[in-house]
Figure 1 (cartoon, rainbow, N blue to C red):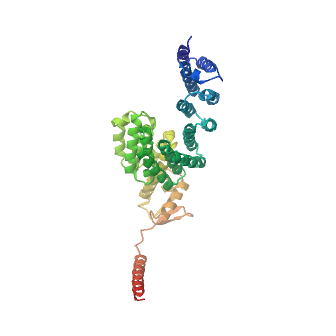
Figure 2: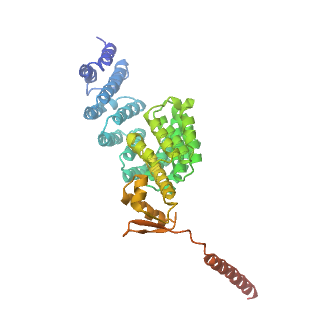
Length: 424
């Protein structure tokens, strides 16, 4: 039986008899193992080896065999060394990316990526090394190893600026922006994003990379509470990812809906969900945002908390959505508390807690914070377990008057100093 028909047989068996398919792929890869040379891999047999290698990797991915996938990558390096460098880079990145769909395999993926970088240095494959280091930065980011990511980014940026490789430079600068954002260093995150956009303007930027730049721009504008501008960027992101059938499109849609919720426009959420572009992404992810919009529209803490509990994975796993919803919940809680205490000059904290259906200690903490923030004027009588609310005191203009007087005196002194300087 020819290698082509053997490969076809293995593909057919992959779903129904994976052990047999694995055996066939291994047999193909074991032919002349350790004796690869350009004359062998340049012919059709070499192409079959490449296909068998990738297909076996996909088989391990589908059956969650992370350890076997790592062994496959390590054992295939002798074959990798004998094929064209561009092809090697594509196969290596494909195999390493297969880990992404295997649960709890991120540490192993990082380990394999590091090993492959060392191998690429030994083989003097500089562009493969840079490509893998860029991938490693993204893996560090996913694993919350932010300082390791920044260290690698700094060395990569020096190399890339020297080589003037703009495409990879844009990717690394974008990753730098994301890492700095994760570390809450927003000024540096914005600066890195500006650098990435400047570099991108000098080259043709592929749709997926442009969409990623727009996504990061939207995230940073949302951090500044500029949700209107953020929405525009997320819309561009959705169009970019949607045109390429990229699964990240659903995340851009969720961020769009989040912006409308934060702008207090829950009615727009339903219009967007029923729009042509969003209909293809209907599911729990969109339902979660719809539930939050409804709760916010009704000013209901109970509905809000029920939505967070029902859609915990969809709303709690993403740090961007989680942080903005936490701020929204806080605002909603404040509005409810102000509405409840408004008719009273003295009210029991337990009664307020009962009205909002929250623990007394949580309500007491929030009320004390609101007093410090001067949302309303009052004191907490903890001995009696009561909140005493005061009328808003009349504004004392003495302080403002004193400041204005000092300002005018300063102007007079400066004027006299200038005249004295001219006379002398």
